Image (cartoon, rainbow, N blue to C red; front, side, top):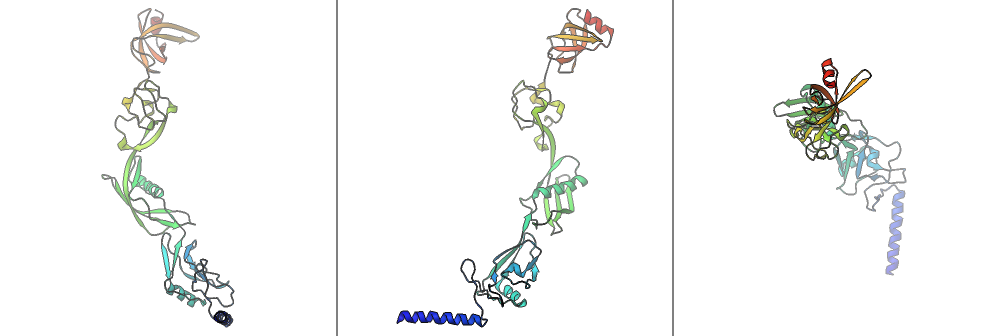
Length: 340
């Protein structure tokens, strides 16, 4: 008898529910997780309105269709402005119910603690782009030398809509040349203005070695690369000119990726003082050679004094290779000295 009573009870509830639906009574909807959401059937619609709990907009207006799934065609309306990029809007149960009432939707919240979070699909403005924009303004108005910027803060806290281009504008800029500090007011895509501060870091371009160099090795063009470094890393002895490193010889082991000092290098001497060298002179189709003793050391293309071993005359010759120099026939005296 007890089992039959339960069965009759279920049949009675089912019949009452069916009769209520047929009479247009509200029916509770169910969320994807099986919990009720308080939605009711829209008149003339087979599916219940489903309230969304997380909404991310890619357009500037909040629509009914953004808030409710299964909204019938022709009922979509704008209900509010979308939150600004990077910000969020929280809709409570009463506010959502008021929207539903205002637009004639047959929906009511089943519980009072409902929170729908609305955000805008956004991108944070990179600090690198902000730095570049401020640097261009500083270079145009204040700073002439090479420099980089050290922006205070790790993030910009500036956002734009994800489907928009990115356009930055500096509205105001101040700079103190003694402290190297600056303050800027900047905005992205016409949004709210943000204060950015930082410091100008003086930079210098220096040659660095691509790989380690051993003592006595000649530094050639392909061994170096030019890098910008903070000026504080350089000193008066740091190499900053090409001619001060290309063709020079390492005095000691040199490490790749580190600024090179003038004291780390020495000239690549092709002729050493006191060495016997070969002297040549060319005049038209005639070439003469002789042995000479270098009175000076010299690198490639250096002009040194050389004593003709045979005549003991001193001539000036240009170094063209290891222990080899060529005499420019500036006068017959040089030729006579060479011939002895």
